[in-house]
Length: 190
View 1 (cartoon, helix red, strand yellow):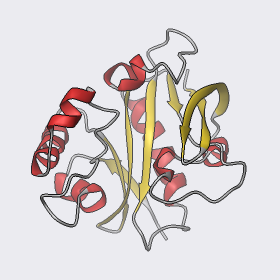
View 2 (cartoon, helix red, strand yellow):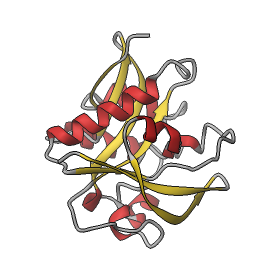
View 3 (cartoon, rainbow, N blue to C red):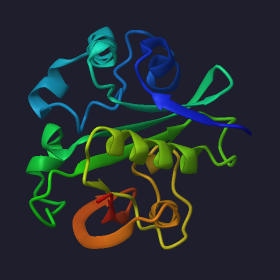
């Protein structure tokens, strides 16, 4: 499968990967770490998609999309940590004071898994962050120890995929997802 990764500036394509089957459904839209919890709780149903549409129209896209031809097959959220709840997290430590970028969600559409889309998304998100001046990219994947993870909860990524992309373990966290610890992984771009 030939995969191309581009900035997620086309809302329709983002909706194809992240959006709900029913327009009134309350799905994440990858907002839970991006917006303050009060706003996250206030945005309901179609308002969530409308908020993401605004992000797609912004000067800097809210992440990247993977395409097979013209079909969007995956998504990765990446932004300056200072613009996310990771900036205030008590469970995920700050290693230093660098203006790092966070890569916190990697999603591949069913039917496209197992073809390297995740690897392309991680690499594309890193390049997107680099192009926007990021000195370091952090991720907070699950350290599953090789155990299978439910696909719904695997959005944070799996440690070994980030290791393959050159990220190194920088710190343990007290965050747990799907019954497994999350670790702080970093890739220095300097």
